[in-house]
Length: 294
Image (cartoon, rainbow, N blue to C red; front, side, top):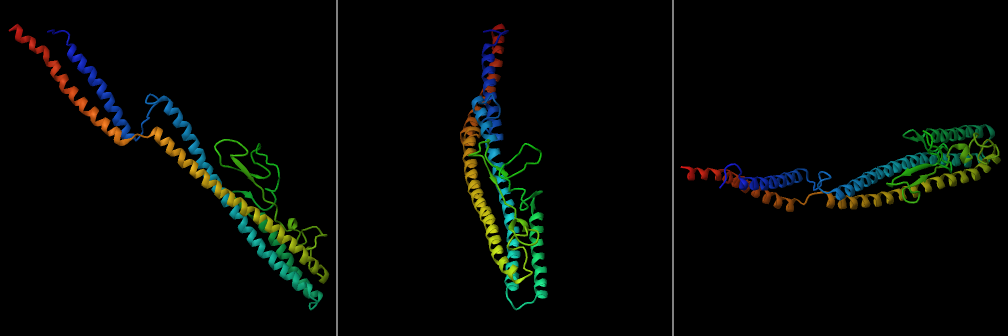
């Protein structure tokens, strides 16, 4: 029986330190909801988790990018719908001017409205923009994208993947010009265009053909926009599914199993309380030596 050195107390104190450390770790995991709170908890798991988190964040931003692109396409399609109305009115005017029951003065009145409709088509095409990007004036009609300058030129790149693979991570939106000159209608178009004017009966008859071609050209642009919108919606569905699955995998690596950790917490709590009680008893053991001294 020794007084200067109480090995029993030291041993219990070491056990208490271990149990208390484990209890603190369980408390931290339960309070944060994470199994991995630092690299010391699981170095490999932490590395995998952080890589997965970066991919998840990129995919979620990719979904937002694709949704923005859909909004852009809807803006362009809405403007083309208005242009469609103007073309319908122009064909109606051409049909009116093509008949022989009107004189030249009346045809000039029809011509005035006809050219006003063409000017409005050009105004709509030049004014339609999304977040500062002009959509229908030909800026996005280029076949080559150049993103090296501060302001990218050519067709519009929509990036939604978490890397930079041209097959998997992005594609382009290309929108042809829908100004009156591009559609070949009105006096802003080439003078040889069939839909240049309706000021005479013969010109009005030619304009009917030219306007038919203009409507077809406009419909091709709208059909392309609709196809791109459907493609983007499918892309969003795939990205959302991919992100959800990656989040589930990341959760299995990173998140704490509350039921299991609670059982561990209770066990460590009991062991800590028991060690505290035994440490008190161990510290009182040297006092028994006094009975031998008396």
